[in-house]
Length: 301
Image (cartoon, one colour):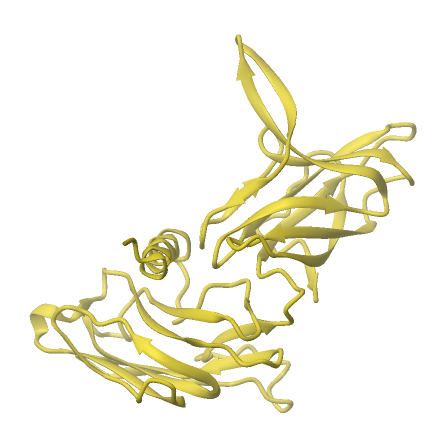
């Protein structure tokens, strides 16, 4: 029998290593997860400590609101964990020899499985990275005193979302400005669903209809057509951009001019068929101006 949880974890780890390699911190996948759900916390380690050649141990402090189930063992590493069912506790992996340590040029994820709390909140997981030389304690947690500061060693953060809010990371969203009298325009965004999902509907008060479109070459002619849903594989960013996948806004209800911000509702469907929504605010930009790599959408629960 196929182990769905293990398959999802492997898919997520692969996506993490290929899409977030430039990130310096020990992090969890962006996009959050829903209250009360089973959750595979995959902590991505992409580098050794400063001036070190290898990571020799990883220690994760679990918040008390996180119910521990198990941690994924690693060949050549000793693993110590709390008792299954514990609320909180510490998980530690330690390389048995220099030969099995994680080299600075290698990237991997250390996975802890558990169940999320029934209340929506932000959970912080301090991670201690021990290396052949020195250590890095990714353990800083935001407080009212440091809320305006950029933390140098932030703890890994997970946004636990209400049950009706879709778990998805939204980046680089923008709408192309329309000229007066134009009946339609395009909207573009990069979406990443940490546990996998399908985008099945999009709505905006600025348009009578918003459809998911793809561009396809047929008989040497590029054609645009609507598709009923867009797959978002676990942990993989899916880019909607000019000339490819995009959102088509039709029957515009107002002028769409640069500098405006438009509201959208994204509806996602998970593997069990449950639908959830995510509200986002998206800036309007002139011509083909892209978002410049910055987060071009504000997400709302």
